[in-house]
Length: 358
Image 1 (cartoon, one colour):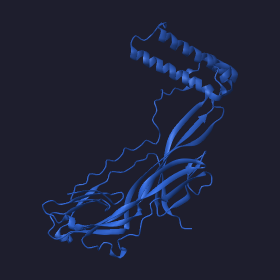
Image 2: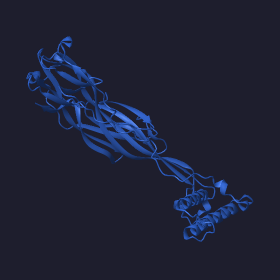
Image 3: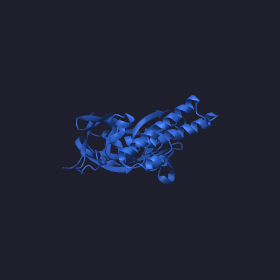
Image 4: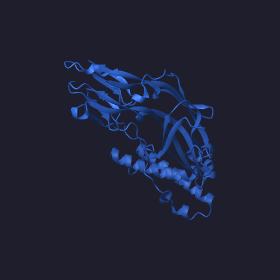
């Protein structure tokens, strides 16, 4: 069965949307036969998948956490494991040139200084008007930033008593005593009862930070460690017609996002439905790039999109889709007025008219 879409996947450490569009100004001069060739776009969906990788490592004293620290078993990592969770799906769209939809903007020889603004890849942006592209969005970090205390090796806190302990339970007992001593020292500093309490706020902040890091390293011998990283994958999908429950990708608790044909993961499906079917186009395909003194533009259609995982809907929205719409013609006679030349702005991503200014 022929698939109703074309898609690709990019696994990346950072994701960037809407790269800055470069606009080129093309003049309809005599040397160019008073014409500029352009492409109409087809719509491509960009789908971002955010998911988390959680790495847990059990501490050597995990089974003594409740006995010596009073920590509930639910708060203790009892075994090493790595697992993934699906967090969020977001979606956008952009236009790419449809190589089968090439047309010519052709003006009369005496039209006043006509010019056309095109994207670098030939999509029409404006006629007789400068076009300013939307600014690019900043790249997103792959791993979510977090404030962390300075890392301290628990071994740097081992006392002579700990090192001479002859059993695991004895080592756990000594480590717990050290934790309580650190807590007592911190409390003495905060209440001003410590003999060498720092005199300035910055000095106290540094000392307390070190004590907190030391305590954290020792407590983790009992509770274990949990590290969560935020990861991302990006998909591009070009809908050619309605899509009914096609596998976009698969998701595994043990591997995260995997390919659609990797059966180690459970399928994440996508539906795309044309909700405004268009009437037959008025533009004869045989006249492409030859339409005399007229400008062909898009009236995009509208599609509903839903992405779901099992019985859970992860994303739902509607989008304008160029290839689901129809073509219309704008006569270039609008540009014949030398005293008040008409300016036309387009949406490059859909090929639709945005604004006409007299």
